[in-house]
Amino acid sequence: MSDRSPKRRSLGVTWRTAGLPMVILAFALSGVGLSTAFRFADAQFAQMIVQPKGEARQIANTSAKAFDDQTQAVLRAAADAVAAGVSLSSITKTSVPDWIDGLYVWDGILLDVTRPARDHRSKIFKLVRARMGVRPLTSPSDRRLRYRIELLYDNVSTIEGNRTIKTDVVLAYRLATSTEGKPVRVIARIRPDLLRAAVLDPRLAGSDKLEVIAENRATGPWSQRLPEALRFWVLQPTSAFVIRQQSSVITQKLTYTGLNMLTLGTLLAAIAFVIRAIRREVELSELKNNFVADVSHELKTPLALIRMFGETLQQGRVATAEKRQEYYTIIARESTRLTNLINNILDFARIDSGRKQYTLQTIDLAAVVRDTYESYRFQLEHQGFEHRLTVSDSLPAVSADPEAVAQALVNLMSNAAKYSEDDRFLEVEVSPDTRRGKNGVVIAVHDRGIGISPEDREHLFEGFYRASDARVRRQRGVGLGLALVKHIMDGHNGWLDVESRLVKGSTFRMFFPAVDAVSDGPAPDAP
Image (cartoon, rainbow, N blue to C red; front, side, top):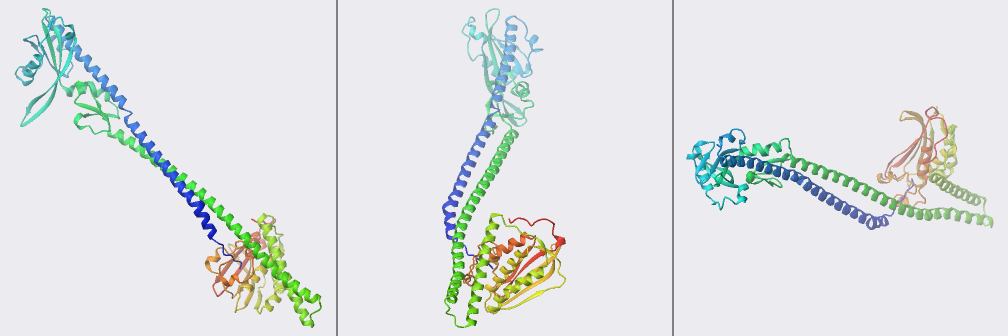
C-alpha cells in the first residue's frame, strides 16, 4: 500500500502568480474583442440602414423632374393656346394628366376655366382668383416671367356631413403674354393624392426597402423629403427592411459572441494546460526530492544493519551459534529487502522509459504462488503473523511471466505485512474466476491492517504516492510497489482491484486471463 502526501503550498503559489493573471488577461482581451465586435456590428447596422438613402434621393429627384416636365408642358400648352386665341378645351381633352384638377387663365379678367365648372361658385375659385392678383406684372417684355413656374399651397376647407376636412391644394402657375401683348397667368390646380399615385408610387413598385409616409407620421431612423409638389410625404425605410437588418446584426453579434466564447474557452484550456504542466513539473520536482530522500533512507537502513552485523561476525564477538544464526538471518533479510528495493527502482525506471517487457509463457500459476509464499513465510513468522495459503483445485492455465507474478505477489504481501498493527493476519487465496466474460485465475491477498481511505484509493496505483495517514508515514517506503503491480497486471491483460475499509483491512485481487482468453504474441510494452 504505497502512499504519498504531496505538498500543495508551492502549487498554490504557482496558480496565484501565473494562472490567475493569465485568466484575468484572457477575460480582459475577450471583453475588449467582444466590445469591438459589437461596435463594428452597430456601425455596420447604421451603414446598412442608410444604404437605401441614395435610392430615396434618386426617387425624389426623378419624381420632381417628372412633375416639373409634365406641369410645364401643360401650362405652356395652355398659355400658348390662349395667346393664339385657341380654346383650352383643345388641350384638356387629351394632354392634361389626371392629377391636374383644373386650369385657369387670367389676363386681368377670367378668360377660361376648365373642369370643373362649379368652381365658379366654390372657395377654390375665389382662392385662384385671389392668387392670380397676388403679384402685378411689370412689363410684357419681361421675358423672365414667361418661363417662370411657382408653386402655391393653401388649405381649402370642405364639408362632409358634420366634419370639416382640411385638404392641401397645390397651385402651379405660369406667366405668358397674349397675341396682343397682354400679360397672361395660367394656373393649374393639382390633387396631391393623384399626383403621388401617378408620379411617386410607380417608382416604389416592387421595392421592399422604401415606403411613403405622411410627413407628420414619419417614424423611421431617417427620412427623405420629397419635392415641393409632393411635400406632404417623405420616404423612409420600411419596417420589414429595418427588422431584416436588425436580425442580420443580431446574427452577427451572436456569431461574434460564439466565436469569442470559443476563443476564450480555447485560451482558458491552453492556460489550464500550461498551469497543469507547471503544477506537474513542480510536483515531479517534489516527488524527485522526496524519492531521493526516501530511497536514501531505504538504502541506508539495510546497509547499516548489514554492515553492523557483518562486522560483528567478522570480529568474532558473537559467543554462541544461536546468536550467529540470528545475525545471519538479519543480514539475509536486509539483503533481500535491499534487493527488492533496487529491483523495484530499476523496473520502474524501465516502465517510465517504455523499455519494460514481459516474457509470457504458459505456467502453473499455483506453483509460482506456492514458491513465492514459501520464500516469504520466514518473514511473516518472524513478525508474528498468522498466515495461510489457499489454492483451489483445477485452475486453468494462464500465460504469464513467472518473475513478474512473483514480484507482484511479494509487493502485495509486503504491503499487507507492513501496514498491519495488532491484528497480524495474512491470507493468500488462489481460485478460478470469470470477469468481463473471460475465464481466468484470481490471486487475492487479504489482511486485517489499517485499511485505505476512499480519497487515497483514487491515487493508490500512482508512482511515488504516499497517503497522509500518520500510521502509514511511520513505515519506510518510496511508493513504487502498487504502481509496479498495476503495470504488471496491465502487461498481462489482467485486472487489479482493491477492496478496503478503515481498521478492517484490505483485499487486493489480481486477475490473470486463462490461456484460451489471451491472444497469442508477445506481451504489450509498458505504457
